[in-house]
Image (spheres, rainbow, N blue to C red):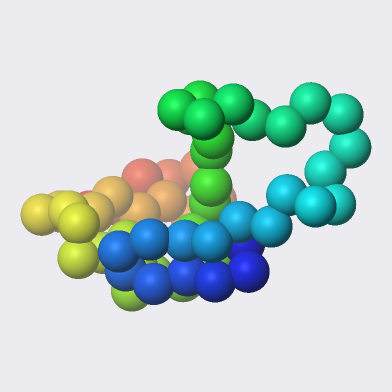
Length: 54
């Protein structure tokens, strides 16, 4: 990911080896900062050391 905002992200695939994702294919992206995620949900669940807290 070379650019990221709360609305969209920009992915640079020039370094990919092998097959590139097709248009419309689902790709998993793990956010690196909470601000781009927390505004999308009404609640959160946290876990630490295998123990879930709310």
